[in-house]
Picture 1 (cartoon, rainbow, N blue to C red):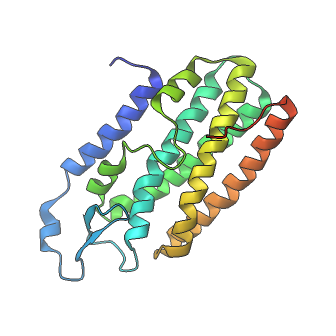
Picture 2: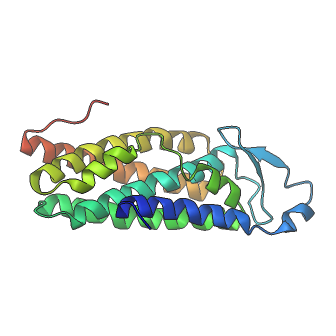
Length: 213
């Protein structure tokens, strides 16, 4: 397969989601009237799976489908900085914590999506870039950097990335119906807010500024 390692990882995520959609069982056709069609926050039609709790609403479904690729990008960005040459111990430590923590949260969200038979919805949103996510060109550029330059760019991009995630997560806390997911969303805000403060301190020590757009 051609392309950068990061591009191959993103492509692999999308391919897995689409493959999952292709193997969904026809058993959903036998669901009763309590599993009526829904739409997510983007108006995408979804059908509640047999094991989907009644309290799961369109906000929950949209959040899981959109936050999973958002988190995956943060994991990918962290992997880049962890393999870059000459980066600082402080930035590497932050990147490792982001990689581990967000992968655990991905696992939780994907687990729920699988239980709820939301393969189609996950596949639909897997390639989307929104809410502070970085463009493929920015990701490719990050992968070419090393040392202090890689440190600074990673911190700037991750702060911007976290800012977008937090904005999206507040809606889940305010309007989500599935309490375990609401609790996870609050965990995301608590952790990423603390990480943003840490990033601000690291950039300030370098004499560098945050991204403005």
